[in-house]
Image 1 (cartoon, rainbow, N blue to C red):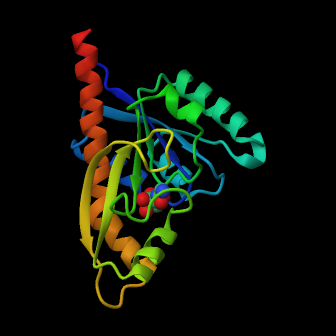
Image 2 (cartoon, rainbow, N blue to C red):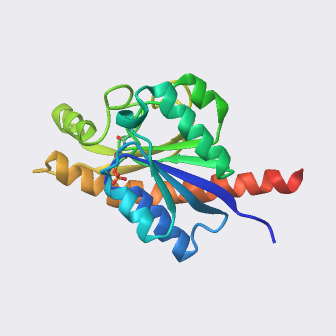
Amino acid sequence: MNEKARVAVMVSGGGTNLQAILDAEKAGTIRSGEVVLVISSSSKAYALERAKLAGIDAYAVTKKKYGTLEKIEEKVVSLLQEYRIDLIVLAGFLTVLSPDFTARYPRRILNIHPSLIPSFSGDGFYGLRVHEEALKRGVKITGATVHFVNEITDGGEIIDQKAVNVLPGDTPEILQKRVMEEAEWVLLPKAVESVSQEILNLRAAL
Ligand code: GAR
């Protein structure tokens, strides 16, 4: 039988996007890839708990323990090799990876970003901050983007986007939740399946 694409998910926080991927795997909407590794930049991330509950090996690779980005990435690369990872998914991973790291995995790192790129993206735009800025600017439509990761923050090729309405009375927290529910948790599993499928197709053609 054909082995599925082996997926690593990198996280920093609550891990709802990780959960959406795990749920899609269980539901069979992701069938070409399987999550075999979770790496967190924080030892306190609830995402680690979600990985544990799903029986997936999970590691915290923190600044506190490893000191520099270089050492962090060294450890991440060794885990990716050990687990023979085909596809890396940044699901709320809030450390900006170095150009050396991203150059190792062209079209093999996905990221979910909580806005319609290029709006509210790039260095400093992450998490709730993105929604605060969207509300400040008064946009009526926002959304989420899934894209490949390259050396430019949020600058890689766009894979898919989904628009979400901003409604009167929205707070950053309310808007964040709507963008997650309506866009992120839909887009990310779908992209994981399509890129995993592409990896399997390339493998079959060899
Ligand atoms: C998500 O909204 C994700 O789009 C965002 O962090 C949140 C993580 O939530 N990522 C970025 O802002 C990346 N620039 P989660 O841990 O519950 O998946």
